[in-house]
Image (cartoon, rainbow, N blue to C red; front, top):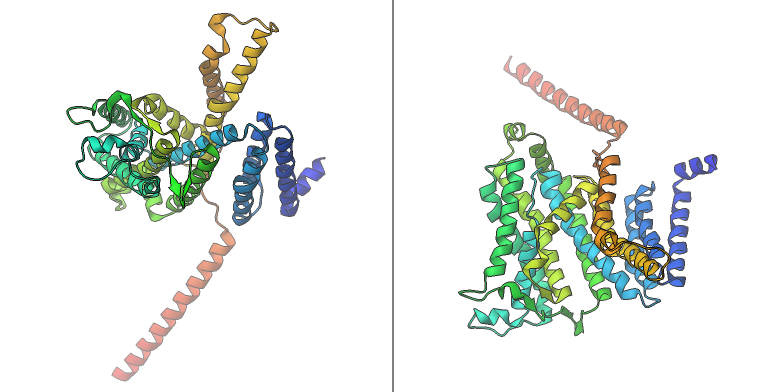
Length: 437
């Protein structure tokens, strides 16, 4: 067995065969046992196993795309639990995108933000106000609600509105850092929620605590998006763009500037990095991802109100980043997925199962210790366990590893070219000296 594992570890071909076989086997088990949450989770776990294989990034993207676009929806669609599975998958995508946005602020730039859900609210209300009749309360022109085709434009508008809000919040808080920054951002997050809650007078813009109802669903080519299985593909498309953008930003000049500011602001400023612009870009870019997903959330739920954007939501998103590993894109994706699945599916199913056993008389649970009341306790205990045994996160951030031999070869080529230039300059100088003499 040990030799087999060593052979698989060294041979990428065997790894590819095994991961494909695992995906097909778990997909078949989900088709057969449609109500099995375990089969659904095992199929999702194939993406984590794929991350640890030695396959090239291109092959990993191809296999992951096949799982998310074709295999998972097809396997889940063969039974009555299809929409519930797609509901969970859609929320996983929404929270992953928001966690990646917060990872830019907290993980890369080192700015502790406890009011990040405020940008989510800005995006949601940006679409919700104009996709309902609410806009006619304060605008005397135009016909509202706007048609569902406007949703695709509001994905851009929501991101821009959230980015502007990020800059407006970022400007006054740049004077503080550390714990004081966390307190100030927490205050701003609560201020925005309270403003939305009370912005129904003297001019009714947000409809206050009553919220916005009957938000127009997205529409494309005459097709109306109403079901979780349809929103799943919208979320997946936005998530792919988000992951690609964050990965490119991480290793860009701006990403290196964020990391320098995170490690030491004084040293970063001494190296010529503009602190104010770098921090504001972190707030704006991170907020834009949250704003885009706020638009999707409003269209998906067809209802938004201030209670959807509480401090608990901000803390939950922050915990996703900490649990996965600050600064690590794969870690943040895993942390957000684990948190969302635990909250929406695993603990809910476990609670329902214990309730059924209690009703059947198999076990007797006191009312004070009922699973419904202890669900948050179980969730908290699991998080404490992760924090104790994986303090750096499930997938900690790693610095890129460079091939020394390639660098030395490149250095040799650069050295030879420099030597050639020096020889040419020397020869021309000698000729000039000879002509002068």
